[in-house]
Amino acid sequence: MTASEPAAPPLRRRGERMRRAVLAAAVDLLSTQGLTGATVGAVARAAGVHETSVYRRWGTRENLILDALTTELDSALPVPDTGRVRDDLLGFFSSLARLLGTAQGRALLRLSVEHDATLEDRRGPYWSERLDRAVVMVRRGVERGELAADTDPGLLIEAVSGPLFVRVLLSGAELDDALVRGLVDLALRGALPRPE
Image 1: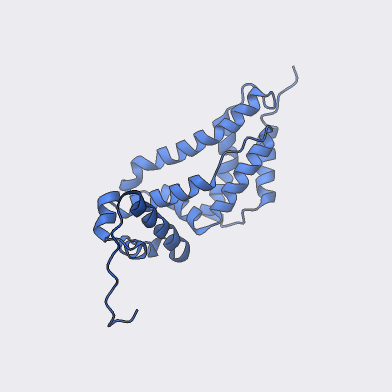
Image 2: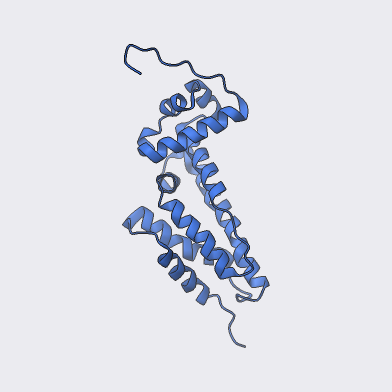
């Protein structure tokens, strides 16, 4: 499109079709242009909807980005049930490491720790819900006798996820399968049943 060509009129999308188009456009822009390129105007243009429709549905850019990223990441982070706690944790945290290695994953993590007042109320529940989803793997391991009965599921999940988050936020060091295996094995050694 040249400067003399008129912009294409926004499509008449409503409801779930509009939501899916906007969220997909937001994820695409985050992947290609990062947080700074994912403005409400740019997302609306890419989705073919009116900017006012985006504001009416999400209220703020931060809410839009958080919804886009959580929707995308939640669908890509299933909780495995292989019958073995180590395999479940390796599968889950390998997926998490791959996601955190993407522009979307890094953007979500950074966005979730920013001190923007609009995210204060949502930041806690977002990570609490993800940790709650993951602790079921540890609880199953306790029930099967693979882990000590007094294992703290939340603490074990945090022991593995924390170093992954630190690498993304602070050091920029690589997230790979060897790291995930090492973290899972280290955390599990501390939770193994102890001889009487």
